Length: 115
Image 1 (cartoon, rainbow, N blue to C red):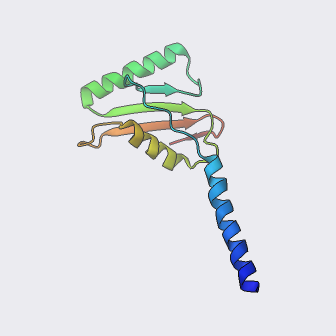
Image 2 (cartoon, rainbow, N blue to C red; image 1 turned 90 degrees about the vertical axis):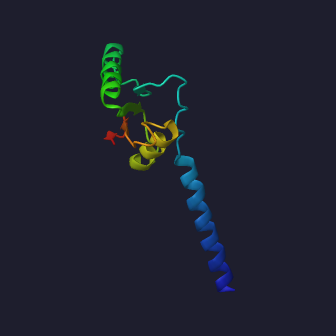
């Protein structure tokens, strides 16, 4: 009888872990139809700063073929920034696949984290 209770408690604990992790996940924004070097979801940059940064990153990509995207978000909602940034870079296909020359710089405003 004790083993049944133990199994039941273990099952509940495992299910709770999976369910609680599911609530903390945040969606990666859809890739824009037009390539962009700056995605300011947290609205950290002034308009002129965003334009200047975008121009510099696009010029850099044109001269080196390395694509850099700077993205800001409000919060990670408990996500690990390293995993989230890597998944974002994969989803948006940053860089050239055969060259592996893409870089995503992710900034989370409320978490005060950068990756």
